[in-house]
Image (cartoon, rainbow, N blue to C red; front, side, top):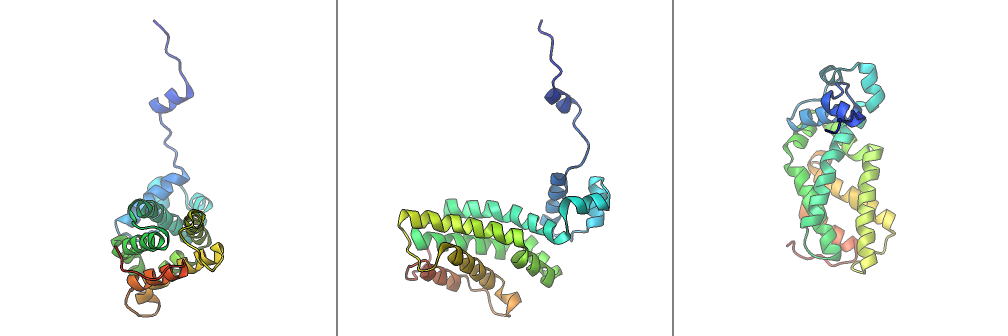
Amino acid sequence: MTRQQNTPLSQFVERPSQRATPLDVLKEARRRWLRGERISLNDLAESVGIGRTTLFRWVGTKELLMAEIMWSVYEPTLQEAREKARGTGADYIANICRFTMTAVINSQPLRQFISDDPQFALQVLTSTRFLQERRLNAMKQLLTEEIDKGTIRPELETDSLALVIIRLTETFTYSDLIVGRPIAINEACKAIRTLCGSHPCPPP
C-alpha cells in the first residue's frame, strides 16, 4: 500500500488557516453592504478578528473599501450586460450602458447606501480614482473592440469618448441626487449613440 504523502496542500485542507486576509475583509464588508447595512470599520475589524490598525493597513480608507465593494458588484454586472446586450456598434454600446444603468437604479443596497449618506456615496461612486480608472478601462476596451470591427466611427479619441460616456451615465443615473432631475436612461442612450457615430433609434 502506498504511503500517503503529507503535502503542504493536504496540511492546509486538514487544518485550514484561521487567519483573516484582506479578501476576508472585502467579503464580509460586501456581505453587510448587500444586506443594506452601514459599514463600520470598527465592527468590521472585530468581526474578522483583526485590529483597527491592521484593517486600515489592508484597505486604506473607508472610501477605498467601499469603492472595492462597488467594483465587485459592477464588474459582473458589466459582464452580464455584454453577454445580453443586443445590436451592433453604437446600439450595442448604448444597450450595455442601458443594462448597467438600470441595474444601478434597481439596486436596493446601492439606493440604501446613497440614501444613508448621499455626499459620501456620490464621492465613492464618481470620484474614487481607482474605481473610475477601472470603469474607464472597461469602456475603452469596449469602444476599441467596436472600432476595430468597423461598427462605429466616433469623432472623439477613444480615451476622451470613454470618459465622456462614463460621466454621462453617472450624470443621468444620479441626476435625481445631483441636480434634482428625474432619471433619464433613454436620453442617456440617445446621447451615447450619437457620440459613437450613430443616429438615435428606439431601444430593443
